[in-house]
Length: 222
Image (cartoon, rainbow, N blue to C red; front, side, top):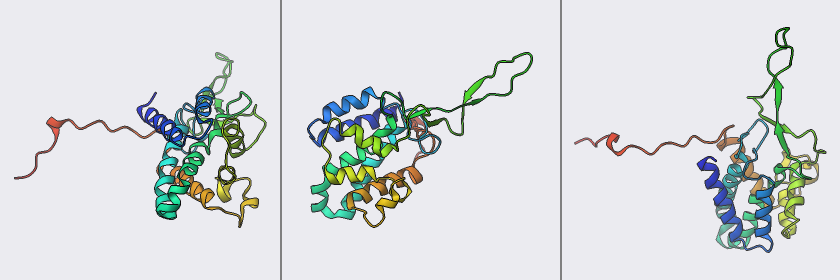
């Protein structure tokens, strides 16, 4: 597994454990079982690659805490810190799927046309959109699946439930019900999620820059 994926997975686990929320260890074990650390973050947009979901989640967790310190002030941030970690860490849990079905399946497209010599149609995974929402899964938006999966193991507060459910903001399917009912935790999560997906993350995992060779470092001018 990519080092960035491993580092992100370690961060997510450590940070969620730090909340000491009853049931969090069982939830983390469940996340492992349902493929949280291998799933893509999207079908064809940000981090649409294996391991993309956990990298995105770690990015959102880090930004949500940074923004929370600024927006909320030290006292309010300290009061809300565990909730920020919970909602940021679990907001996309539904992208692992539900009912023993993955949320994102490989998007297979035709690879050329059959010929008389090779009459069998061949398929390949799309490069433009490698994954698509699983057609075998009855469609339920992933925020709803996220609260469903989390609620199996931990007790979400009212604010946490609301924040995860409406984390897509006015871009989500529940936008009509959110309008004029935004809440601080929900808005903070939406900002961190949107910023990471739109402005920080590409389609693939970041390229890890090799450590510089000390012998090749430029010497300072005299």
